[in-house]
Image 1 (tube, rainbow, N blue to C red):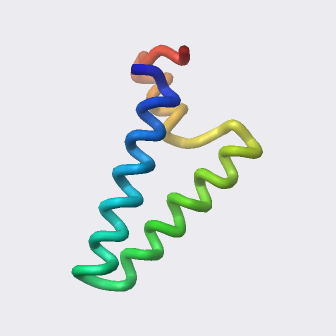
Image 2 (image 1 turned 120 degrees about the vertical axis):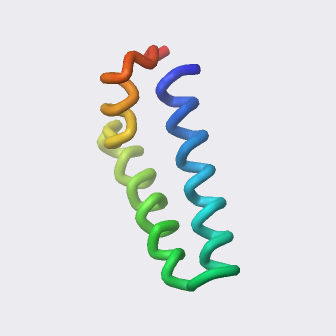
Length: 63
């Protein structure tokens, strides 16, 4: 898997998990959903995401 595919997988999993937590546990979990969404939004403009840097240092291929 490439960095972009893992990034999409992790972001999607975080969003689904935080929405489930927001519905079933506490509405405060939606703050994490907003954080992930804002991070995805800024990465569309800057082409930088903290997870991308971590994955690249871990040796995951870029393409």
